[in-house]
Amino acid sequence: MRFVFYTHSVVSDWNHGNAHFLRGVMRELVARRHQAIALEPADGWSRSNLLTEQGTFAIERFRRDFPELMPVTYDAGFDHEAWTAEADVVIVHEWTDPELVARIGRARAAGGKFVLLFHDTHHRAVSATEAISALRLEHYDGVLAFGEALRESYLRAGWGKRVFTWHEAADDRLFKPHPEIHPTSDLVWIGNWGDDERTAELKEFLVEPVHDLGLDAAVHGVRYPKAALADLAAAGLRYEGWVANADVPKAFAAHRVTVHIPRRPYREGLPGIPTIRMFEALACGIPLVSAPWSDVEQLFRPGVDFLFAENGSKMRQQLRTVLADDDFAASLATSGLETIRSRHTCRHRVEQLFDVLAECTNQHTVVPTAAKEAVA
Image (cartoon, rainbow, N blue to C red; front, side, top):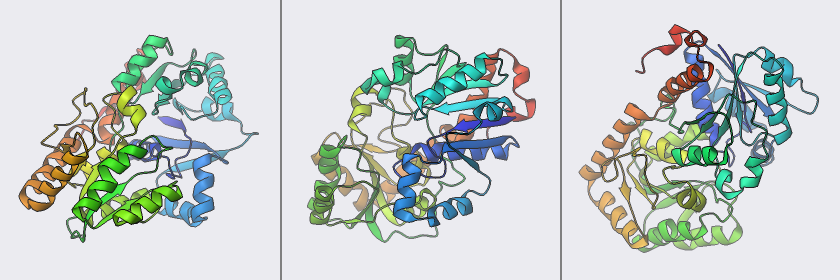
């Protein structure tokens, strides 16, 4: 089958975590001998910022790390109808320009034979409802929402014909333990500043605990304002800037623990949806302590796969416990990895995607039998 993904970017993961998941899904499709093409705007925000900050090396690095992926850039004169006409499945990400979202829908309505899905991995359905409600989704066969709470928001608003929960997951071909690397530092946090959506949380669950416990710690991410950088430095946290997603597994392996700090709009408006960083960290076998979020869908086993910290004081306690007890830390890492491998890999999500395609078409012949292989 021929899959076409409209992405904000698959080449750039600069402040764009969804690229991680789409890369993993596309790699899984290619491994199953399907064709997967990523279309992205040539002047996309993430791609432009990556080039400005890192130069063309970053693009070369992407090609080296993900040689099986096929990104194609488009501009104002691009023939979208020609590309979608040759596709079996078209998946359009929510950061796609609204007029293009509508244009692809019109192509589907005009006789397009492809299955057309809209993919939402953001909180705008609850934080900026007018932006999502203005999208023309009437010709889309379904919506892929990255959590049950988001799916319910679409259903309540009447957006889309069918809405499916399709959580993000870890590409475990890339995100895996590196036992050959021995930790040389206590803690690492990998995440972006987040437009003030977690400023207070970063202070409470990262900056202050690291300072008070005197930990050797590092931060990777982008868009940190000067005041935030000053806070990190004052607490003794090394700010190490952008890190290529392909380097993250080894960065985790060099540290003894990590933390998960979700953005406030997700925690308050979309319970049950962690960031993709949590899937990736557990896939790498690093102990994890999380700031509060509601695991209403029971994706994980809190207290077994990872630890919750209800407040800053509890975060200090949990970090102290993990760092002082190697056996306990190892049990968390083992359990978290077990849960990822059994439920939350891109292989699992591709299996779910084929189920969605079958439901959208009501024709099992749309999905080749060979593609319905059992998940390893």
